[in-house]
Amino acid sequence: MKITILTLFPDILTGFFNSSIMAKAVKANIISYQIIDWRLFTSDRHHKCDDSPFGGGSGMVIKPEPLFKALDYLDAIKKRVVYATPSGRPFNQHYAYELSAEEELIFICGHYEGIDQRIIDKYVTDEICIGDYVLSSGEVATLAVIDAVYRLINGVITNSSLLEESFNGQLLEYPQYTRPEVYDGMNVPEILLSGHHENIRKWRLQERLKKTLKNRPDLLKVDKLEPETAKLLDKLIDQGVENGFD
Picture 1 (cartoon, rainbow, N blue to C red):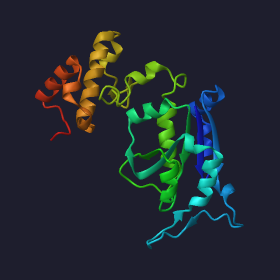
Picture 2 (cartoon, helix red, strand yellow):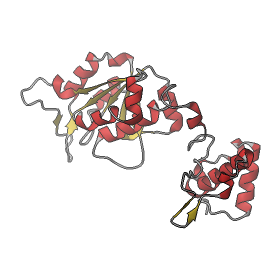
Picture 3 (cartoon, rainbow, N blue to C red):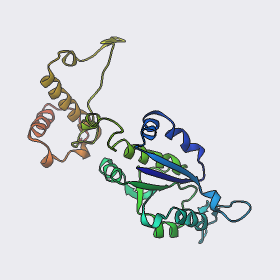
Picture 4 (cartoon, rainbow, N blue to C red):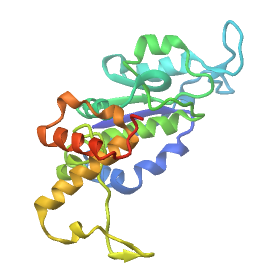
């Protein structure tokens, strides 16, 4: 996948592509990227990128001219262009999988009161909201989307690592433990030390259900659960397991 990011603050972004799993994906040529400072597409000597909003109001709005030029330079009218904004469509794991199938993505990092609507109308294919809150940096929101997307691309991480993650199969991930077996007086659950793979599988399913009931009951669509999972869910509710329905 080729990723292009249009930003006024490239320094916020560069470390992400040079670190951890992303750095390995870039080195393996699974991901290629470019970070473009759209100030380079301004025509005035002060490289002005924002102006006050028509109709009045506080703050500043990103001007259309430099972004139009930058997006035309990228031939963006023919590509998928993502803009992270609080007024966008909610972002989730299903959406991340959808974007991960693209060969190329262009991201616009907003700032201040946002970008001129004409930029959105002409170029943006996806307005994405990462949560019900507002950030001062479009770069942070953009990186959250990119991080969720690129890890799903074949070859970035092993497929087995994705299978039981949160949001797969309507459930959150089960608790994880590693050595030592006892720390600060707290023990690893005995079942994880038993070597009995089927019992461990059942325990993990139960713990996934417990965590989902407690933290995200809205994810559970009972009519779409596997029979084993639905039966265990009924049992947990009968036992009075703490859940977010109350």
